[in-house]
Amino acid sequence: MSEGVSSQMVEFKADGGTAPGYLSRPDGDAPGVVVIQEWWGLNDHIKDVADRFAAAGFAALAPDLYRGQVAKEPDEARKLAMALEFPKALVDTQGAVDYLLAQPFVQPKKVGVVGFCMGGRLAGQVAVHGRNIGAVVAFYGVPELSDEDAAKISAPLLMIYGENDQGFPPDLIARNVNKLKQAGKVYDSRIYLGAPHAFFNDTRPHIYQKLAAEDAWQETLKWFRQYLA
Image (tube, one colour):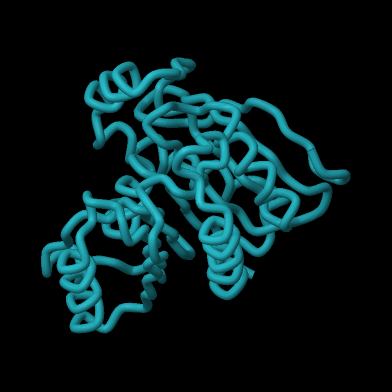
């Protein structure tokens, strides 16, 4: 972990109870970012991403949507993801946003949301349904938006995709972009040539794309610095 960054597990209010999360932040004041996990769970990779945000000057909170469960194999991850109730996951995510906004070290009082894979889909839903969201970055996750969903989006939305991600074909991306444009929203999209789904995950060497991941990271930081700082 970088010098000047501290981390700890915290509890925040969610769905009538509490939810756990991994908080990583710099020593001083910082805008907030909620980091939503992939279908694997709150694993070391997602904690490392939160640490990277902290090193870059953000207070990052990664909610543990699976309540302590972490998958190692795709079949296990698929079962956990299928069992996850998205409305409750959205409540968890909103709880994480509200927690950060209530912290004295979150200055200015702005919080962004970023998600990867399953978390990217959740981030897209947060852009539609979330409250007090400063900006959203969704890595390979925003499914087809309805006209109604596009109209509801209030936060600047950056969508990041890999060209070879078969779950998000070019025509779907184009339709989403067109709907956001027609609705007059603040948005941008990036499609990384030759990159597969989950290309950002540097713990999976067979799909990690270093150049694409590094560029996507810089674009993410630029987006959050523009709309949160």
